[in-house]
Length: 351
Image (cartoon, rainbow, N blue to C red; front, side):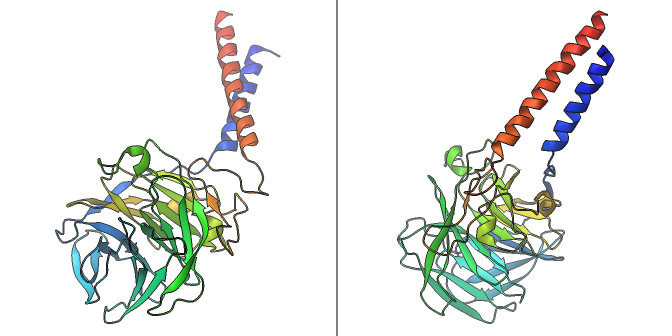
């Protein structure tokens, strides 16, 4: 085979290997708008529809959902209720239009109960549901609600895996309803800049600070201070989704990023605590996620069984096809193709 043919063959191998490992590239986050409203200085939860963003502050002495213009982030009105929460940390919205405020913060881990509050779209009705953990107090900032209206709480853990909890049965007002740990999520440290300067980066990049579910329920998002993780949920099963390898999306350098949301078009929105902070937009986020399951996940029907997500690195679940040998072989092919191409290029020049 001539040198030119060898070069063509090497390029073909390189191209095929690139196709094998190619995945949808994460779009660069852009600035949607900037929250200049002074009363929203501790943005902690976010949801979005076509025309509006709905935001909550961390904590507060009454329920308050800020309604912002989607394009400008200007405050249009507030939906309020006199109910006094303890430490609201996340926000979700169900198809009936109700807002779910996750009163699950517990920095000192001394609360006997945490709570979810269902707030009507006009703010006139607030229904309290108290919850108890089976294994002591936990600090948490992420709420996920599946297609059936079942809530999942993901705890905020500096070392080790974050716990995934859901109610034992239907929520009772005012409760308490017992929670059960049904899974865990073990994220890996990243080099993405961001997070509070008071927290070591190795910890800030793994703390789960918010969660969201796409409008059709097929993609789940968890975020840390620095990154978002997108999980495929083709059947709407939150727990099974968290057992699959996620797509990691580095977020802009947010000083204390806790808010995350999907809009109806599948774009991802994120925001940070602090005055004058922007809302960032990742276009087409849901399309980055392979709709086919990458791991077997788990049913999570009892105890700590079920899914165990593994952040950007991922580990195959029991019974799942092991991807690492395949990926390793592809990497070797790419390296060999590159070496062959360089060698043959130099050989041709010598001729």
